[in-house]
Amino acid sequence: MEHNSTVKEDLGRLMIFKKISQWIHQITTVWVMLISLVIMVLFMIFVLPNQAKSSLTETGSSQSPDTTFFYTPGELYQIAIDYGEDGRQAYVVTRWTFDLIYPLVYTGFLVFGISWFTQKLTNWPDRWKLGNLIPLLAGIFDFLENSMTSLVMILFPTRIEGVLILATTFTPIKWILVSGSFILYFIVGTAALFGWINSRKNS
Image (cartoon, rainbow, N blue to C red; front, side, top):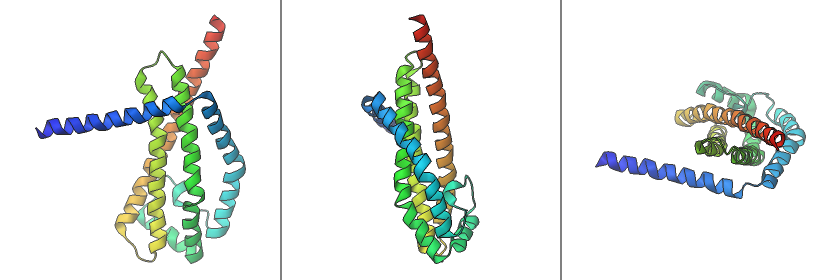
């Protein structure tokens, strides 16, 4: 009975994920995809470089846990020390202003791009359409990472190992999901482009 109950719960979660994926596909149009692309490009050109300079000035360090793939709890705590009081405050402010917006920007770019491209791949298995959930998970883990690293800075000098460990766990998961999302975007985007070229040749 317990096994059957577990199976039903797993199937229920899978159905929820499928419904979310399908809903995203329903709202994805070429204009939604293009707008998300333009926003991403403008953000990378005008916002990211300025934010990097501002972060360096405010924290006094080029090190940041959210731009590092892997770090230990001790290294994260050392970053908090190196930042100093003003730097830690600036870090927290940035995480809940700029870093609230940026995950939405890149998540939207990846989610809508992957959704639109996979809609064009009519000969591919339907499971590829579920790929639009990967960047969604990346954005969630980005927010979880920001929450934990912010707590480290806020609670300093109190050192809570559980918070440090969670931060060091969420960060690599985030980067794996982000990297996987960009790779998937490139794969389905390239496939959709070649499909369009072939259809033009055949017509």
